[in-house]
Length: 153
Image 1 (tube, rainbow, N blue to C red):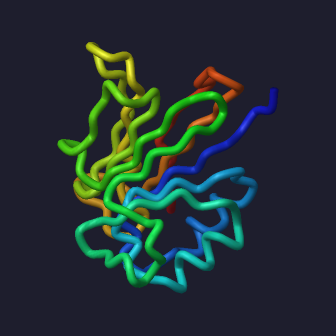
Image 2 (cartoon, rainbow, N blue to C red; image 1 turned 120 degrees about the vertical axis):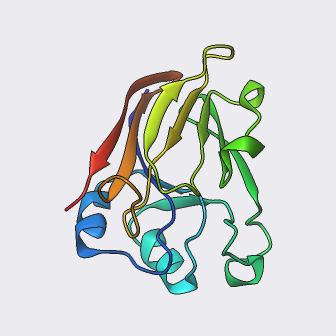
Image 3 (cartoon, rainbow, N blue to C red; image 1 turned 135 degrees about the horizontal axis):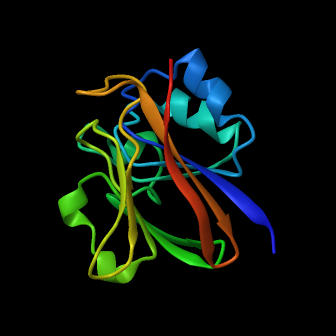
């Protein structure tokens, strides 16, 4: 039973700020909800931690390989994760944790019908009506210990 730290980002649009890169240090997994817009940024993130990535509306699969799709499903920490750029394309009955992006507006909430944790980390690059942000989810085998939005400088 290991506690795992998942750092959640989206909509980096080809720019990883020094503040973001510093905040990601120590992550076990980086989950990116699309619009990374840079194969070199994907490599940079992969050098920090294992990356789970879905494509956003500004991404193309040929930049990241054929295994990167519009929806990413994976199991980790005994939980089923789903990552999709658009919230409206998430099927909350299929996952314990659902991550979206696109709006550049951060939130974290529990769906009242399914109990699924839903998070949009906002954008560390181009925030809208908020400050630059990312998310963090701490899990301990089958349990979500903490889920929060982190404001960046």
